[in-house]
Length: 217
Length: 163
Image 1 (cartoon, rainbow over the protein chains, first blue to last red):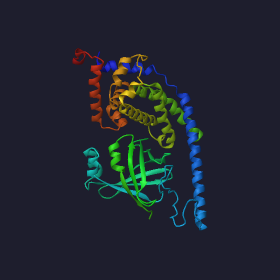
Image 2: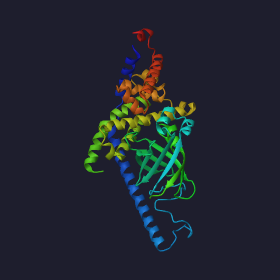
Image 3: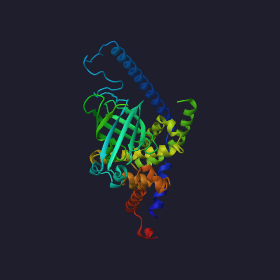
Image 4: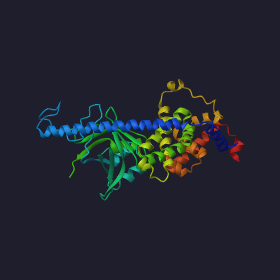
């Protein structure tokens, strides 16, 4: 018997011997979503309360608990990474430039690098975080910006940033990043230790390194 | 999520869960893991339901996500030290065709996925390329290499091949 026929028969026999039980799983899944929604609502409530408290304290010329009077007041949504859920500025964005040479050194295929870096052999990337979503944009050789990818983002309990794509390009692909402030809190950020579902080398080329903060105009 | 959205989602869940679980099962050879992976893919669909429900084929989105999770899981397992894997041997004897399951388990994760999608789901090469996020020529290469390996493992006769 040809291996193709043998395979088709064998795979069919093995597949039909398995009867998945979906109903219980559906209930589990709805419970999980309800829990997540409740947790998110609670976190948002806490964040809103903290923000209001911060504004009230600043208006009254007071310092927040644990904040020295001469310390820069943290802008809304900016918390120093400290091994617990953190946040990145939602005003403005970050830009990052990578070169053809860096891509090739990381093992990204030449064709992909050429396609992305273009004639100037430089790829400019930008990212903006807003209301739990992210948008990545890039420019072409004529410096025209286009949105490249978008999705949701969240922080793990140990402070890692997890981006989940919802665009049709790579649906539900996740990228997990370690990050730290390059200097002052709320300014430039350094991404490292990239972990991605697919195209790991490509993701490292895009992400690793210092991203420059751009304040809103 | 509104009641009508939930009804629509539940309908997709019930329609997708069995076939996607079976496909994943043929790759991972573990019933519970196959259901876990499918559940995770469907959970991601639930989280992004408003976007995904607008797609022409939401079920294709779920299949793609589930298969990518399965490939990743297989790659993780392959990376484990052999001693750890020996501690959890997979039993194929309870399956109707244990020889095919054993032979497929010998393939690299991407080859497994390509074989299952091609021979079980009858997906065309361009669709497999899209699911696995690789080029069509890479899929053809995976299928060619997998076929060679499977022919030797399943003992395809020289006469069969000549036909």
